[in-house]
Image (tube, rainbow, N blue to C red):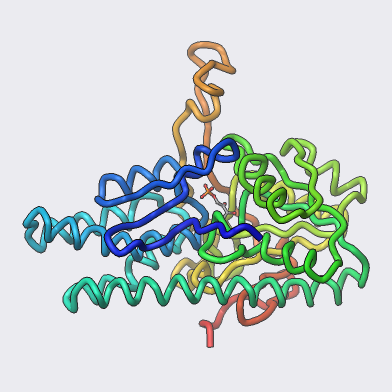
Length: 341
Ligand code: MRU
């Protein structure tokens, strides 16, 4: 696998890959101030729940360095950290990453950077464990034959600090020679599937097909896939799962076809303080993401858009939640009602 590092600490700032330039170019993006980080998060230069968590944690360090350079008082620093925390609302990892290191601000920059690094390393290890648990469960449940897997959005190295969550399971199946093909939903409107997932699969030499989002339900009902595996931005206490818009349609199709719909996410994405899906804040993004393409309009002047970035799949449609500690069979009644050991 190519060494893809979506989020790195360089010693004097954050280095990201500007994911808006992919798949055409791999453009590093050095972030040295809070405005730059908030901008990178809002325009999805860095994205994906676990990667946002790590970026948020290091973002506190970015704010502290800027505070020292510009002579901020404590209130200004706190306000800047809050801006990072709230740059996007749905993925709980962003706020959780900031909250994890925030209590260490008083201890100084080194303490904050060390804790952010610990979070990054946990994500790397957690990704591997998710891949192994998910592959074991799938091969046990679906059969010991090469699997045809549908996925939505991007859950790979670009979305995490490691090799991915749902895409980590795909990588593990491929490594065990138990993967036939991946159907990658293009993932409108910003094409994380065709731009990012397909790019990662290409790098990894994993067979894949990019399909329009509108093809996904038909692909499932025609029996062309054995399982759908997706990631999550937030899993509520009752197992309801927010993920990229379009996920719930895939879940409904899987339920109708009688195949598993599997969510892969680290425990840092499980939010026991959010009781159910109705309480998950769903980001609504700019209309022009839907009404224009490459700057050219694709709808008549005056058209209005509804552009939720995420949807919520009810727990009853989630067959399994794969975390770094194992597999919860959610629709069978095992909800994530306990913290990670
Ligand atoms: O808007 P994005 O690209 O940040 O949305 C990302 C997703 O929905 C991913 O599926 C989710 O964050 C899981 S990433 C391992």
